[in-house]
Image 1: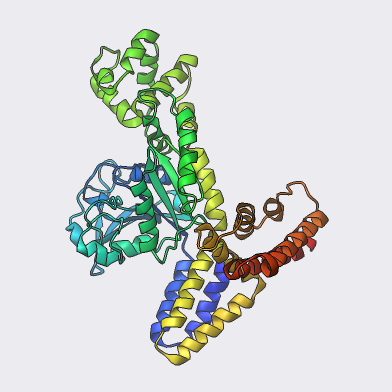
Image 2 (image 1 turned 90 degrees about the vertical axis):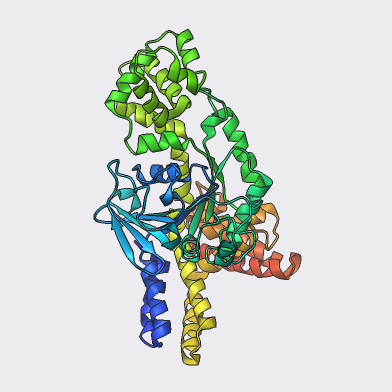
Length: 498
């Protein structure tokens, strides 16, 4: 559902589309239609980083194949629909419908050469997609790798981080997202940072920044090896990654995506729970040997057969198996449903879900309205019809005079500061980011228990502080940002005083 800002832009598009020519009118209607769609989030990262596993966890169904195949080499868009459906969208606009395979997943073979595929459009009845469209991308290639001339042409930079087979339509589908999640494994390398910066630069329409980009440190269960607890290592590593990528993502959240996928998609059956209970009865010494490596888990004598053990490895890997066995050792009567809830908690996925809510969904209205406003401004600057150009420019100016739309100026200012284009002291930057990305004056001002009068007074003080900085302590770029912040806090004070 659209928020007040994006609804106003959509209404404006309708109004001026009736007064402009066919070309501008069609583009205005496209902008309006897009504003009514859910927030679109692109999942990006290196090959085999665990992107598709994370997508399945977010959707709550195992529908995105995680093994390398035709469908993992193209962009796939997952959105809500009244029925499950897979459409292969070709570059020439033709659509080829496919059924999900016997396991309820996208077929490995698309029936169309990947060179002809623009993207795969998947509609699902999953309620989790009602207000979030997820775009699964091909793996980003290392910037040290040779990138094909076609890929360079598609994204417009010689260090394009996309897989070399991605085409212009696929790159455009990724760049059309309003927010992005980057998936990493292990420590961030220098070429990872370069790849992410190249992704941002090549996706000019996305303009990703810490305002609308989040990092996910995936596969953290591999840090400790076997069933060992990875979280004492994962937490500090994620903090280091967040520091390295402070100008690219808002935060880095560590996750065991496999456990999240298995539990969220309901893949663990009662038969799997029974098998785990049998294993949990083994003496600790025997279990310790069994869980020492994947090969030992497969080959050592055990009370469950090889096929069942292989399935448990696929669902949980050694860390998840060890975690589940510890739960059953403490409570042999634990239900499979309760085990799944504990697996989700152990995966770190609840924190990711909360971070997504805080980072993207509740600021979706401003992100989408900002996206639409940028396109209106671009349309006004590039349309060939002089009359249409004037109509569009007048509409944009009228929109920005509305005090409610000062939020978009704040978002733009915060993005420029967050990406390092404009430098501010760290505490000033943090305050500006809070002002741009929240509507809660108490959270913005860090006064959780303050009354209305105290909040209004604090907002006025902040407005005065930014005004003084704008005229006395800042360079030209900082002064422009400070004036936007001053106006924002002035409006906040008026809001709190009502």
